[in-house]
Amino acid sequence: MAKGKNTTIFYCQHCGYESSKWMGQCPGCREWNSFVEETVNRAELKHAGGQLKRQTIKAEPCVLSKISIKKEDKTLTGIDELDRVLGGGIVQGSLILVGGDPGIGKSTLLLQVCRNLAAAGRRVLYISGEESQVQIKMRADRIGSFSENMLLLCETALDTISEVIREKKPDMVVIDSIQTMYNDAVSAAPGSVSQVRESTGILLQLAKGLGVSIFIVGHVTKEGTVAGPRVLEHMVDTVLYFEGDRHASYRILRGVKNRFGSTNEIGVFEMREEGLVEVANPSEFMLNGRPKDASGAVVACSMEGTRPILIEIQALVCHSNFGIPRRQTTGTDFNRVNLLMAVLEKRSGIQLSGCDAYVNITGGMKIMEPAIDLAIVLAIISSFRNMAVSSKLVAFGEVGLSGEVRAVSMAKQRVAEAKKLGFETCILPEVCAEDCRKSSTMKIIGVRTVQDAMEFLLGK
Image 1 (cartoon, rainbow, N blue to C red):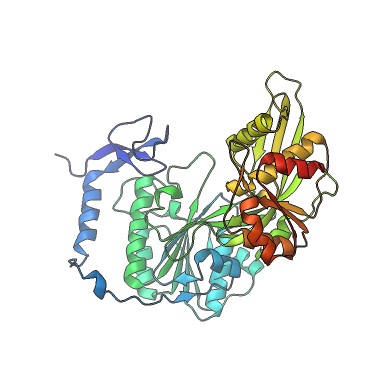
Image 2: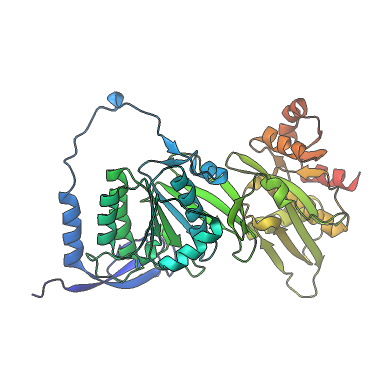
């Protein structure tokens, strides 16, 4: 029998589920049409797995009550917005995945982090499999000068990279990107699911064994690449995703997984010629350029992790010339907006069935929090009646199917953020109104139903 016989295996590009045959729906993550075919060498995979197992130490159980807990020392990156998303800084020996569309600014941000850490006396190793040394040098010159603690390696062979990391023993390593890394023990092509997963497993052992913090860059495309970072989310300690349009000036870094801090924290950056510049006050940044005395525009307050952010919600409602009205949303859930319009039509008597409706959240934000329901409803009413809402008014609250306005969490923090930016009136659920009146000098309007909010808006 031939040694190292090739075998065809099907992988799910979303969760990495392995199957011997193609299936329309993945049994692991329930995604449709996500299986891709790959040719792998079973003997090499088995040999690689056995080699990794022989290097491990025999595990012994321990008593839970006798385990001592020490506070993890976190290294500050010099970028406050990134430190916030990471939970206070970089934890030693952590494996961090940074994902996003190509060209959105992942490499630029990590290069700035490398510059700050190298200037602070940390040994940093930047490994690139996509660009040459000259290309990285040209981008680094736009960011600033680098100290001698910054090391650069252009390599894709993982065996060579592992030897360099063990020899140099840096404090931080950047892998740009994981789709270009190649492990000789796996016969699949670079960028495939098996290649990326095995390479990440080796980097995980290096991070935990040597105490080196490793950043992994992963590309995400609209089509969903075979080796998408979602396959690696369960292996790494922290997952950060860049959001926003690559052609726009703003970037939003969101933490979707963090073993050392809270999730759903965001950091807002602005892309400039010298690199990514952090935005200290995202609310003011998102509300910049608001139209005055325009109907269909209402400001809402959303909580992103522990940070309240004010965003403008715009709605455009007009009579449709077609048999089926058109509905479109940007930055929020399409089905949620349809539900809120049905609640308005049923509970408030506003006939929207023959109208086109467009809802947009400005600033490139993607908000799925139910607390913005009330602001969406008021924006739709304002556009339908062609009546402008006061620019000093902010609204938040969850809307139920019966038209009731339900309580939301952290109402005091939302009101305080609105007060800080000069807003004078706040419409919020009646359940939260009493506590907010005690702690704020703003005009607090508590509403129980959508009808109450509409009557206040119309001045009745």
